[in-house]
Every structure is written in C-alpha cells, then in structure tokens.
Amino acid sequence: MTSFVFYIGAGLAEIGGCYAFWVWLRLGRSVYWVLPGMALLVIFALLLTRIETVFAGRAFAAYGGVYIVASLFWLWAVEGQRPDRWDVLGAALCLAGSAVILFGPRTQG
Image (cartoon, rainbow, N blue to C red):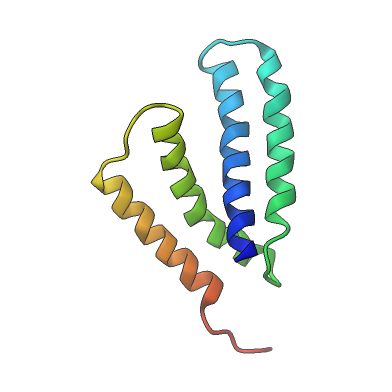
C-alpha cells in the first residue's frame, strides 16, 4: 500500500515539474517557473526510490501505468479537458500491466 502512495506522489510531482517547464517554454511565462519545476522533479526522483521492490527497472516500469493515470487526472483537473472513454480504457490497461509487473510471482535466483 505504501508503494501506491509513493507512486501517486511521484506521478504528481513529475507531472507538476514537467508542467512548470511547459508553462515557461510553451506558454511564454517567466523563467522563474523553472525553479518549482526543478524542485518537483527532485521530489519525484526521491519518491520513486522509495518503492518496495529490489530492482529499479521493475519499479520504473510499473510506475509507467501510474504516470498515465496521473497525467489524465492532470488533464482533467488542471487543463480542464475531461478524459474520454479511450483515455480511461488505455489507463486501465496500463494499470493492469503495472499490477502484473509489481505483483506477479517471481522465482528466486
């Protein structure tokens, strides 16, 4: 359960950090948007290292599904664009894949 909380926090931090750069570079806002963007990206990296798995690659792979869901939440909550049924279906498939990666039975060795 704690891994899920870390994944959600990491997803929001990464999206927020990247969005700050988007605001600066694509929306023409102040370069000062970079400062909170960099801070959020550091928080993202710190949170992702807290995932309860032995291998980083597996944690990163499973994070992909969470990132997609968090991105669609951001699309809706921040950008005001409601995800459509294809967005929701794609996100559900990605979360299922993340669950298989994280919780699939593993052999020792």
